[in-house]
Figure 1 (tube, rainbow, N blue to C red):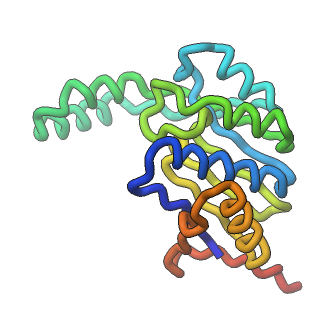
Figure 2 (spheres, rainbow, N blue to C red):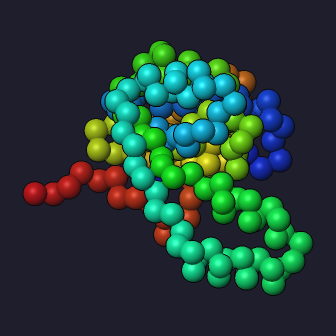
Length: 194
């Protein structure tokens, strides 16, 4: 079943504790990970270098907006007025590539993803130094984090749900921070029939 970590109305310290506990729990059970980084958002280049050092790095180019797309976007922004300067800057500053790091979760992985919060230039979220994190058990995505921690999702079987509830309780966290998602976003966790 799919669960979201519900951080609404939590203080930053509690949100960080929930994130760090869930990530540590999932990393201990996972076989491999994929991190996505926006190159250049880190004030200290060593922060990005440490994340890159966690596994094998690949770079994926992002298609740049065409001139006509930029002009159309600017016209839409002018229509809304007040946001014009901010949004034009964001369009021009769009990254040209995404860095993916693939590897096996270990103590260094957990340490690097829990030692610092999101970089100052991150557009959303404030919990994780990587933009996106996916942890896999076999082919099943066990844990996903998007937008520097703004969204966290766990795909769990009953035994895993019980285990993470116990982990949260031992850490002094409320297990009800995990909420089940509506059925229309449920993954099928049953083994494939041949």
